[in-house]
Length: 274
Image (tube, rainbow, N blue to C red; front, top):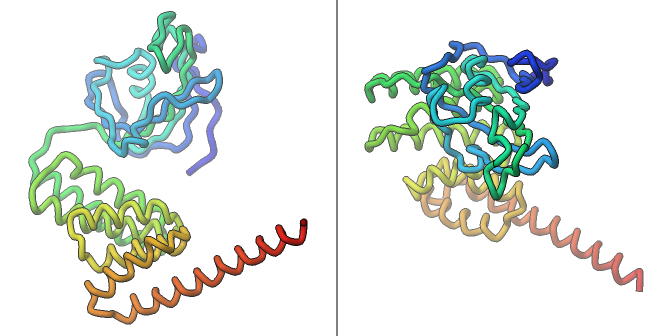
């Protein structure tokens, strides 16, 4: 991700300022387009967050020029697919003097970080699956080349593609993409995210060995050792005592010893102060 660029005065009067965080490479949006975005909204005054699609883990869809504040329609219409930008929106292009109580006071200047995921075109299920698989192939290539961040982003895009599709074939693709995402996040030491995607797999296939292994590895790195012991039991049963899970059992013991040593040292310091 590039550093934040110089500001762009979208309206020419300072009411809507744009800061590009990451350039997009896809199609540029325009009025009337149905767009899928992720966003985080904060108040400029104190930085408090009032809304976030990322917290819901669900992209937001809207049509430019319909049903959103004017600052959004003007801002997103300057974006390309894949772009991540920050917009500072004065109240006259936001919620005005009335605000949107209780979270947005009257006259508030808003800050939105928006990522344009795609310009939505209605497609058949088969077309969506083909596009998602192509993205997965691209991600696999990046992974083999050691570009784990690029692979992670492409896997996320593939998963997003099928988010609004249903059926057993889609469930299997979600298992595949979430497993791949869990591994990509692990390669980047993003253990919380790795755990999240492993657990998503296990909601569909509770004995998926790959997901149990990723979950176990993440729990150890996050020092969730009680949970890790339970995951280890499930992993040993599902894998028929595979040696990889046995080795993870040894890692749990090592982590417990390290944690106990830290506790002993802390207790000794506390006693020494008395």
